[in-house]
Length: 226
Image 1 (cartoon, rainbow, N blue to C red):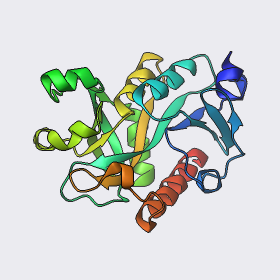
Image 2 (tube, rainbow, N blue to C red):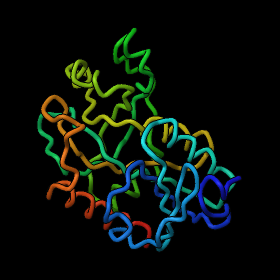
Image 3 (cartoon, helix red, strand yellow):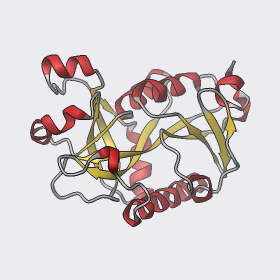
């Protein structure tokens, strides 16, 4: 079953797994990996010291991918993804590490109660610190949100809670990593500014985003080789 899901055998999974919800055209080149081995719903490519897994967008798909990795040689998990910025001083293309992700994954909960940050999923402290030392990037608080439409409406409330970025996977990814007892942390690049950009019309090939994607890939290559 694992091979059907991921396109590789469990014993082919390397100690470091980099999960990405999004594939862009130059990803395999940036990370110097093999072509993807396609499973359903996931796909895997092999890099020097890591396995790259296309986990597909959304909390459910990404977190399930982590759970399936429990009985493999995987020893640590890194999420490479995009996010929107809730901070007024951020610009598109900025890279950050996530120190904690607030669970706001439920669309129904957001409609009924609003963005109540009552459950924070922390990154693994040891892995986060090693990534901080290797990359020099800041670690900030993220909210994993269950609605793109509601992000704009609740932007000020999120800022009041010192949440600087919003994504759709991180809290579930970190929670799943803790559940299978494998260290997990996230490296995100800002693709849009909430309240200013239409997320559906973002030019993901813009120079700012391409520069961020290449820099993130280089940092991960250096980290995997260390």
